Image (tube, rainbow, N blue to C red; front, side):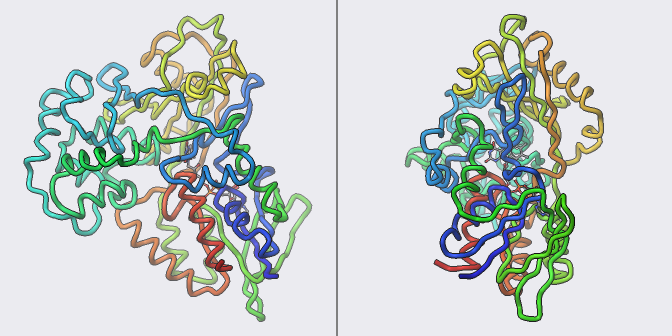
Length: 458
Ligand SMILES: Cc1cc2nc3c(=O)[nH]c(=O)nc-3n(C[C@H](O)[C@H](O)[C@H](O)COP(=O)(O)OP(=O)(O)OC[C@H]3O[C@@H](n4cnc5c(N)ncnc54)[C@H](O)[C@@H]3O)c2cc1C
């Protein structure tokens, strides 16, 4: 049986370990005390809450399939039905249904929402009349979509969605990598509005922002269930420091544990790590892969979770939360009203209202240098401004995700192709994780599966 070391016990690495179960002797090295990476469930006021990802993208099947396979089928749950709401122009304004990452399919439905000015709505509607040669090559989201729908639509409809998913900005993110469905239409040529309407009429997938599922009890249960079911040896508190090739062509991992250094050897190694961590380990083996991986920028964010006593709060908001465009000058990026959104959470703590706010897009690093108490005060002040005077929380918790979200800049797909080509020259090595073909949990699971396949084809 081949031996495989998976470095990184986030969902990507665990998905790879699951895929190899029964066919390889697998060891997973995870630097933290628990597996899961960005799928982490903590507690606030004794209530389980997600501190990182709170949902699994259900537009594609890989994450929900894996969750079901490891015994969590009954735990998968839908969020409460509510429109995506944008806090802009001084109010909370629902995005009309049918949008694709904020790109509207029916300009008329924007009228009266207060999301765009009348001129902005007219500019969106004019999209169908503009010449639209087929897009060739990559460009930023805003370069393309502002030319189609106007800058106002980018600022107030698309930018908040990109902030929510990537902690990114429209003028830096790649259209092809960050909005692949829109890019595919643009590459066919012709106006987008009729193409999007046809897609909708054909029953095309719902918007990424609503097609999600949660896990009763928290998404942190998911990686733990995969770890328990995959049969791999899981070494937590173990940080891989370097990677060596042995004279026999095997891989040796030098790691640090709480008890001191650890050296392990295996036939193959899968690096299921953030790009900068994979770059570090690959430096001696592939300067090209190292340079390309190091070129992927990462956004840092902070998640501020707050618990309010229902009895004492002056006011509790309706709906699932809201997204915020940077153009209005607010600090918040998004807020999620967990107690409304997830029925399991509402039921488990009926006297408490839990929400989380997030702060930090790419370029906001200075903002995140502020101490926790400052972030909490800012979040409370802006929440009061957005939804109304809720009063003071009874508990707060700040979770910082330093360099937590990779940014798919213009040319990202080509960069990933170069990384994969360079890594392909290293026998018995594969890469997976959020840095490559999608940051969502489902895309990460898919990369884990693919890495396992590279090492040991089925
Ligand atoms: C705040 C936040 C909210 C999000 N919300 C959602 C959401 O709602 N839905 C969604 O689909 N996606 C969401 N995402 C994105 C998604 O959660 C992540 O992209 C995904 O979980 C990344 O998984 P991964 O395994 O690739 O990486 P990670 O989760 O980063 O796992 C990598 C692991 O490697 C470990 N590690 C690092 N270096 C070493 C080393 N040298 N040796 C050993 N171990 C090491 C780390 O400790 C970590 O556990 C969110 C992300 C963030 C930050």
